[in-house]
Image (cartoon, rainbow, N blue to C red; front, side, top):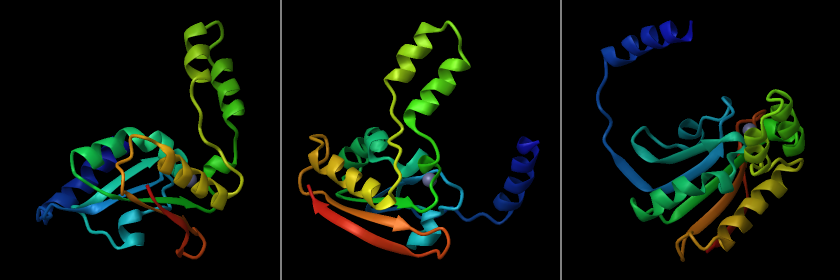
Length: 169
Ligand SMILES: [Zn+2]
């Protein structure tokens, strides 16, 4: 059971624990929930630094609630959008997922209504998806004026990142 694994692993982790210094740093990273993406290591952040917002594909649109918090509560003015190669978001479409959820909930109008209002921002071209998110953030009135947004692709085969754009909101 995963719960037992957690307890065992956490006992080891906590045995030699030193609380990290909270060093917020002026950066929010929006990235995918894919387990091959480990933004702290891959971007040189330490525990206690920065704000990492993760979801399926690393969608900036889905991350906007958290970005409003990090910008207005913690005064962060730099956002990095990091998408990655071989992302699961390239392997299905929003329509396909909606149909799947509807099929699993026959006769449920509430499910249909809710799922039809959701979008997974799927993509086939990772560079295009990063650029789409840069544009989304640049045009979103909730993003603080003067925010510097950078766009990146993380390559799961090489471990390297490459920058694909930047914009000042
Ligand atoms: Zn992904």
